[in-house]
Length: 366
Image 1: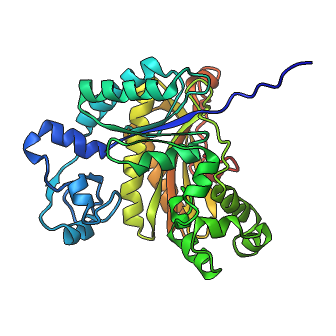
Image 2: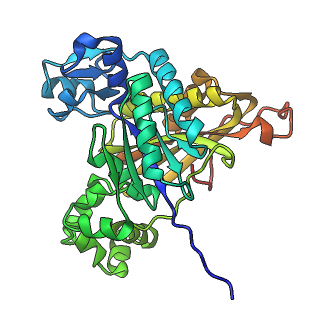
Image 3: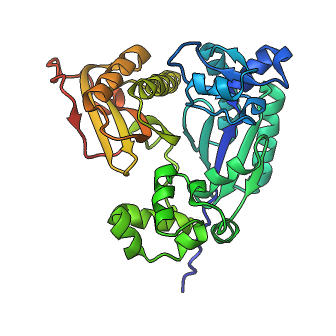
């Protein structure tokens, strides 16, 4: 009679601490210990990132620069230098990737790693983050758990230079008294709607009947809220070896209803995505955006072009056109961009007939 041996999943989330600001502090050591905001100077600019000294005043990524300056008027403004960020990112992920083969990159500064079956994963990760710090000057916070959900939460707990590991049952108990806003995917609007039901904590959400949540949020969203509250998550770490597309997305701390602000964020997402594609030698023909509204409605729009590309200017232009054509009717909680239909999948030369330029809605998620 055979023995059922189940290997426990071990997922890590590696997140560089205030990455762009950290690179700037390495380039300009005289700014260390000071409040620094990385952003272009302009009336519609948004914060790319901020040092921890500025974050103490409430300054956060994707915040309008005008608001950040009101919150922290003495902050030093530094324009972003993406060439420096790309070089540092390449160096640190080469160090990590040489030891951990299974990575899912999320922009320049964070990635998931699947360490299932790796012997002594805690030791491996501690040695890696120390090696990255010694060779690049960048500190990396690590979250470790049985799922991406728990790993992501854990990586935020001890920043900067944090290292937190936790199991599902421990997480469900430890965070029972915490607001549901802790959980990735539950934004301010959902928190407010939960509060209207008398649900103030994750523990209360855990004990809420699924039918109650379904009546308020819809069947799918209600079920998802309950799964998150119990810290259930079986989403895989999707490595380059199995990905059919690559995407970059951002969930906002506060829902965004300004098209100008959304366009700023989309430009950055598209640029970071194309930088990753270029590093990996990948070019695609299908460009898509993903928009999730404050009521959880999720819409994708896509366009297929007649050439393979990883050109940031072209991808950005198409993504912006798709966003403007959709014109989100409600505040946006998540925005993303995707490139798919890579050369190695397309069977050679693309069709000489250019597709229509109107945006087409896709059923497939990003």
